[in-house]
Image (tube, rainbow, N blue to C red):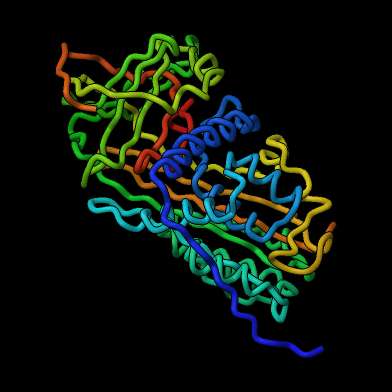
Length: 390
């Protein structure tokens, strides 16, 4: 059989404002769905990165067909048009690099089995739309292959994410590993003074009280009281503009987090007023490992792991399936700002505000709360703090 040069063309149409607006909304839906399904972490601190998962899974669905593709799209609340999806994510991936005042990096890489033929069109989409690089590795040497991948992830996340890939998850017949690494470092627009940080009570429950390092500040913040959710919102902007911030959602009741989480679909949608607020917020650091495969199965993604069709990426229908989708996350919140990172990997094997000033408000986060980080109105990270001291 003669092999001819094939030139693949990718046609992108200008993205309409309403298309990006739809993604902003569906991103919140996906964040809420993933948060809800992360049941393994009940009663614990945890952090997830919806955007990292969305990027790598949306790249993956470009290589899928039929029900494999439609299940992934449905789970991610994506439209049914490949052109529309890729137009949206090209803008999202591009915009992630264009922020002044804080660092936000998203990097994609495809690790391919040596001499294994990945479809040229898929590589072109990955490169031109998702800004993904690729590298050949010998999965027959799992320890060395895992080190190559983990070293790259550590580099892209400023050495915050380690051991994303366990060598035991790699096999000689592994075809490819798709990885997204996302890193954020941001300073508060208004720093907390370290001299005001004190050890204060934190109520893990009414009966369980611990001492934690707690920051304090009185200043103007984005603030909102949601009577329907019985919770207060505090928005702390990042230095460098209004398009990046961390939002803390505090139940009014000390043991109200479970009730709040039951309405998670409403949590990520809020308007803020510019208020003078006395803020008391614990410092916290969270590291989480998440089995995204279990979450995706709960969201209806079945075929990708069994009777998969990834023939637009590699092989024929039924030859390649996903074996694992893993994510590791990290966040450190202190007086200066936020440092957060996430990495998500997919492994394939052969089938086997601000115009109102009111009275002074009080925001005392001395009991479990939910939080999220939003960039350009997109939920990048979300999680909860049950015990700031870990």
